[in-house]
Image 1 (spheres, rainbow, N blue to C red):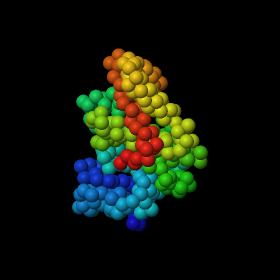
Image 2: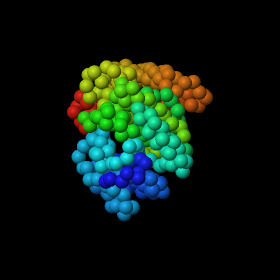
Image 3: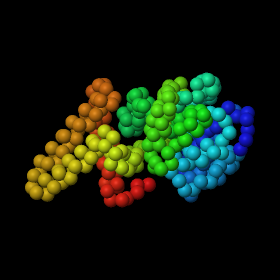
Image 4: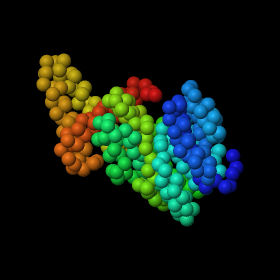
Length: 308
């Protein structure tokens, strides 16, 4: 597609997103200056049909990692500014106005990756209220690829996303960008919300199980990841508790939960800081569930299982 009038190219990876894809596309289509490209990663629902009905360019790309899907969208794009947005994201009305300034800044200073942490669209669910609401404010050295914006110049310079990665491709591309002299800037004015955050404990654990896969793809990645170490400690303590209980030491599991709650409490303090009492009581429980999901990723690695 070749349209030099477009100020930015928006690349949207999609896999079975019929529940969400219309929301993001309708929010983006109000801006005629955007080139919108959906890359369908082998959907079996009506995702592609909905996209075509809205008159948006859809690329059929059934096989490949999420990194490869995003790179494929870039190949079809034409603008000098690249906007990566997931299909279950909603952009605010102010997002379009603030994007104008972002595009201008990227033209002047192309060595930058920006975007913002995605906010939770659900306000009442306890996982959203305590965990996902915090993900927008804590300091991190990367921008999540669910809402990542950069210049084509920088993207080409660092050779895009690493297509061998099944997850954590956003962290890796930000590392490459930093090594190339780029700035990583979380822009709070670019307000977006996420419809796809999990609502249940099982869904939350499965989400972290999937995200934890990249930390254990190799020994070096495992050694470099503090979270992987904590998850392994959780797994090891759980196995010890099971073996001790089977041997008649029935206090083993209570001891395990006390240790893990204490560890999760310390991790909460480290990552989010000291806050109100009810927060400090509930967040360690969620952090424990987080470590359980990451521990399952380790189990998957050793068993050879691929978690979808």
